[in-house]
Length: 467
Image (tube, rainbow, N blue to C red; front, side):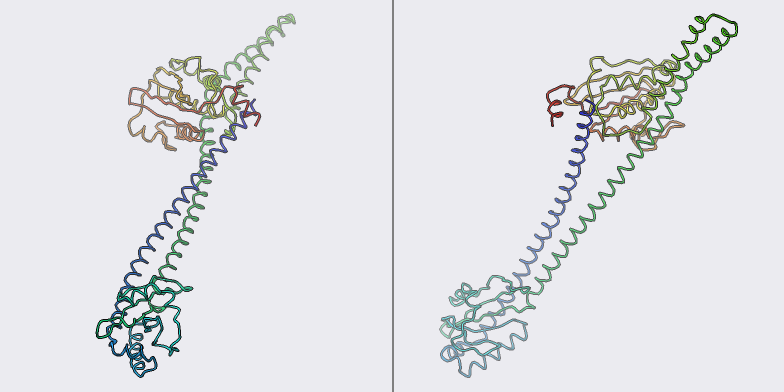
């Protein structure tokens, strides 16, 4: 059964670790998603603003170009694309292109036939693919409405075209001008996109670096907690040494006295039966002394968090076995808990619970230098068991209470300041909680909330064994 509970504790610890890392991973993923979403939204907003502003500028150039072409010039060009007027218009378009850094400016008639371009001479039958690509915008221009096409991308280049109608002297639309933004016209959009991608990559690298740093910090924290627990165990061992010395003195005194009497009887030539009657107490006291030392050493070794469960009665008896006589000598009355909780099992290692209870009760003993009452109370809350350890000692001030769980903080002359810090660390590692209540001169109460386990032999336990 112990192995079954050990496997259960190991699985609980494993699930706790997996759950912790899963939450960390989800948090970092959420941060990354928020960061990239923010960058993407900013990019879309800035891109829309730049696109609108450049589109309006492009449309203004198209309208100004259309206004600079006279109706008779356009009519002559429509009638005969090879007319000399074409050279005049081509010079105008070339000058506009040079002044505005456009990609291309061209004229077309109502049949979507390109008539003239600032760059090349086209055959009258030439079909400009841009007119097919932006057929809707071109049609709107031929209907008398100046419009811009949608922004489109060709490789790393963004392009956009504005169209404006050209009318004759009777305000009839006889053609239109197309003004295409050049590669440099929308270069800022490509730069913006590249910068957003660089920022997103930098953000991902920063999150990755943060994750690596967090992992290292967690490992360092785990090592520190382990060191803290072992250091506190040594500090508790020092407290136990004084109690152990007292427990050892009694059997040693009995052994010494019996040995002297046995020797005396042997020297006086007493009978074998009388000598053996006095001698039998010696091995009995040796066994009792060995049991005390064995019990002490079993609780002084470092604690392994992955262990089986423990019954409350067993843990309390183990802790009180070291303190009961000491409490009597100091005039401290012990009020034990209700016995009905003795067989209730807690999901915590026996050595861990022993150290937790011993640390708290040692603090309670030291707080009642002139005697007092140490009461133990046990209750149930949902799937947790709470253990309340209350004393009638000197209590704590608000500042002492605030710093009670800080490492190396102590009010004792020879204290280590690790007791309560280690207690809280160990309880939290097992999924529990500790609550401290104290007032000056009114005593202190420490309540432990610990997860309970199912009774041995229950259905769930059997199922866990089968799995």
